[in-house]
Length: 447
Image (cartoon, rainbow, N blue to C red; front, side, top):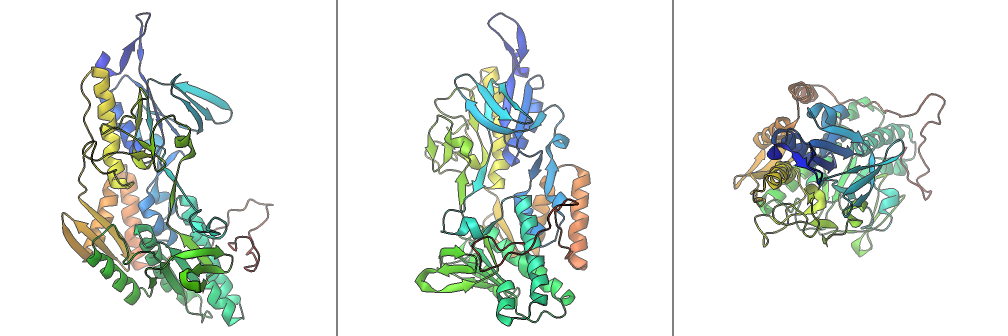
């Protein structure tokens, strides 16, 4: 009975073990699914501020209208059989009393025997002065939809605007950061605008998409050769401008100031750099590493009984105590969740836990125009084949056959038909409509 998730209390009575998971991302969701199989009699609850899992690597495709927003999320309740999902905000964790406080319609709390922290990270817009006020992050479905609306609104405004200088400002898009997210969103914006231009027949202003990257080559996670290839493809095929070894020093309502005193005036600034720790992590009495919970190699948090951590919020040594911290990527989170579930189950049986060790199979990034770059099993690939591999990888991890089919059909539809250029205003009847702000004002110029 014990290895099924049943505990015996001090009074000799048996009860289901209480396992709480905070966070419904890749790591938390996969951990819950594996816990259901390994501990079929345990009481498993998943607490998340959203009731769905977001496939963050596909957010750039939402920006470019390559897929619908509903295709990059999966309702958590549809992924589990026994796990109870609660859409609440976790407000406090008492590791001494083993209690988690939350706020839903009202305040409440849950007791636990084991707690798995998988709350991820948040976007940090404090790296560059003015970025928090004037730049758009890309961390959530809401961010992707807002950015897509911004692009469409800028095209609408530019076709109507009589001043050539103002038209150029409206049709200039700057992306801060040349990593995976920056490259992907730049490619999607470029493709989206190029495919949409024919519907804006009176728009004669050149559309500029510019990547500002502080490194010597794009996507430093990949070999230099692939970074150089990405730069060539983006500049020659997609028309994206790339500024390397360049850092932004200040962002304002008119654009971005660069090192050396130069300046780029742009109607849209997108930030794909900087991640900050989840505020919840700061309140847990355990050792941190750059805002992440430091764990033992088996994913447990040293010095705190019953506490485990996975995903972006955890600094997990890969392969042992001396191993480097795992990168905060979906590929690692998808392996950490099942490993945490296995170790929690082993702790119930009194068996030794196992360390986490994973060697990534490869890295891939789409760069627009049905092309991608990849490093798979030590081989550098580029072009159409890695693009198919990139899509196949994410299609594999989309839950349920129905959602796989929907995404597959949507991808094929987008290959042969123009993108949707509808500007979706989320305004209730009787509410105030969004209006473009004066770019010379101090506020965000987003409609």
